[in-house]
Structures are given as C-alpha cells and as structure tokens.
Figure 1: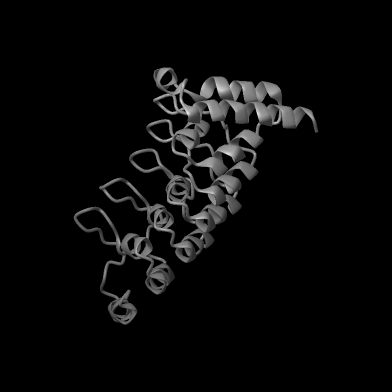
Figure 2 (figure 1 turned 45 degrees about the vertical axis):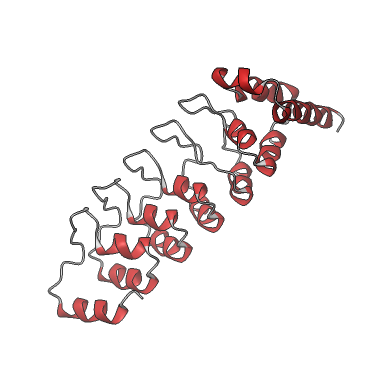
Length: 225
C-alpha cells in the first residue's frame, strides 16, 4: 500500500515539504518511484514542487533510475512523460536508468527509455561496462537500435560476447554474432572476445571449441547469402 489517502491529507494541509530529504538524501518521490506506488507518484507530481532529478546520497540515483531498476514501467512512463526527468542521468557508479533496467531484464522499461531517443545505448559506467546482461528480449531491443558496439570492452577486457559465452547465454551470444554482417567483423569479434588472462584456461575447453565452430558457421552463412 502506498497510503494514498494519508498522502492526500498531508498535501491538503499545504504545510508539508513535498521534496524533503531523509538521512539517505532520498525524497518522497524517490521512495514512491522505487517501490512502485503509482498513485503516490502522481500525487507528488501534481504538486509541481518536486525535483525530478534529485539524487540520494547513497548511490546518487534519481527517482527514474530507482523506478527503472525495479521494473516499475508505469512509473517510468509517468516520469518520462513530464519531460523534466533526465532519462540518461548517471549515478555515482556511472550507471544510467537504462543500465539498471537492462541488467535486471525489464524489457518494457528498456523500450520506454529507448523510445525517448535521449539515451546513450552504449553508455559506459565506472567499470567501462555497457548496458548488458543475459536477457534475450533486452538484447534484441538494444541491438535493434544499431548503436551497440558489440566488441566494446570493460576494464577487465571482457566484451558482451565474452560475457554471453562464459555465462552460457546462448541466445544472446547468437544475437551478438548475427549482428556482425561481414567476415572482418566476426574475425574481430573472435579476436577481441577473450581477454588474455582467460585464453589459456578456455582455449582447450569444449565450450570454447564449440564457440569457435559457431563463429565459423556464422561466417559461412553470411557469405553464402
């Protein structure tokens, strides 16, 4: 329960600071957005007195980031619709609302954010990690934008393709391979996918050998079309 009636009574007094911060630097809007209290979010927005981009001192996340990370798609829509929310804001770790939604597999939220046309699909956080995870629907949405650098590396030299292979995300791996439409691109992916310190341990493994064969199959398919 978001205690909508209580919120309404408090707001009607005209004597409450609707944008007050608690010990974590979070506002009422931040908490309502994070926990999915749609009606309370609407009530707070209607006051016109809330900071849409307020950041908590613990992580520096905005209300939109917190809603996106928890898959509260209706609230994400409400916040985006105001036109005042920074849809590509970065928190203390350099992560955006898109990054949080993608990691947790909230494809509806990812789609809403992409539709704004205001997000950097390949934005990197403090670890040089781009929005990614093993969620097929999310991967499709991101790749369809044509803005994803499929062989980008994080600080440990890991690419999205490497992460998909090592974590057994077969469908995502196939999607990443199929975005490489030329022999040169697939060769580059194969060469850059494995960080140096992983190659020795994986080179003789069945998973890696299967991966190499699949890369070769993709190359042949591309050139036989």
